[in-house]
Length: 521
Image (cartoon, rainbow, N blue to C red; front, side, top):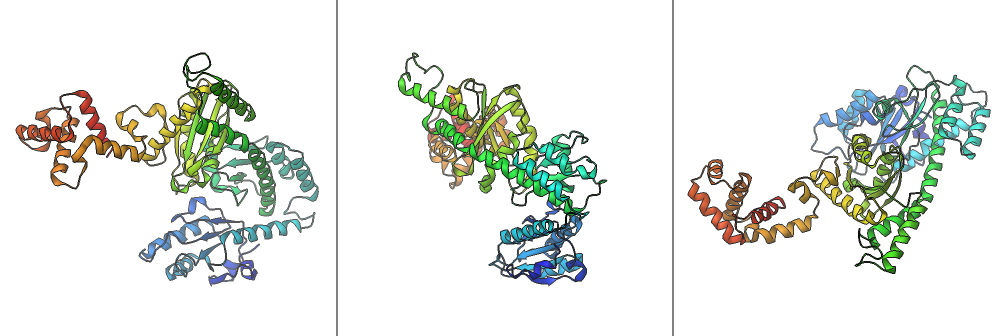
């Protein structure tokens, strides 16, 4: 399919704003939708780029549009399709930038969705491929297509599929890689790649499934020295798109068991250590039945009935819809561990990880090492994660889920793309970061009393003095020096703080109360 074919598709109702015959004759290799201001690293040569122009505003300088289009040119994009919905029309500065950099530009009307364009392009491409004669040297032979279809139906492993697909090319080194650098398949002669090495090759790889999220995307990669007709590459990619859909169907079948397990942990609760049958409080048929239900849920999920376990909870901030896919992708890197994962309310996702041949102590460092690759999948989204301590028995899983959620709250408060283990909370500030905002606010108001009203200039002055006094370990002299005050003035202000808060700053516990209140503001 070529760029000019887009104008012949009446259902899309596209309008050509700029582009001559040479640009319209470019072949389309795929479709990418983006609203990043600099999308270059996510684009593949020959793709058409769909953008709603959210990154641009009328107040922007001309350079903003110029940098965007220059990134498309450098990546070898075939054309830009700009949506009219955000601004009502395509800005003239964008038309000028496309003219300068030699990128064909189309406007997309409000009634045409980007999904419709993507589906139309890929259906047209696969239709073109299927109509090619078996002797076409630029496509897979008919017998190879038939064999690959049979292998897919028989549940062949991905290495076998890939080796057979490129057999006609004398089996060059070839990979199917995930968005975080996980090797899904490789041919026998292809050397193993670390996750970091694989991520470095994704720029030159072909996306397998255009509908996949940034975290669920797979890539087909052949070294640059291997000459393969683009149509053949797309056919091989389509085989793995079908294989990926099969994997997703199998995973979806396990979602019910995962939801039941997470529901038991998060909603019904479990026995706490020492509260089992015969141990006094909490014993009895009720707790025993809950334990039996959890054991059954663990079995249904394919997890052992005995620990150790680790619980992880993840969110993607405001973008949250792909949290489960993001968490699932990093979990697949963990060899020697089994896991079950499910979605939670509020766009979050959680997983229970059981250790088989590995060590539970390996989980936290492994996830922290992988976290930057997860962030690199979509740099416009900040992934946050919280990790519990090791739960030795199923009875400790509920507490582990609470820990993971607390650590996640601390990670979100810390900002950036942060993964926090409960063991990382080793300071008062870190500990308080996991406390919900409304609880922090309430504590600060009640502990500080009238001083919590920071709109009062006198109160702001007293809070500054209190903060400095506690920072200098209650030293009158160092506090006076830091604030450029006389020591008597510091004494007077601290007395006022004690009077208004009802605390005695000669006592350590009262100092801690007020320090915590200041941190909770």
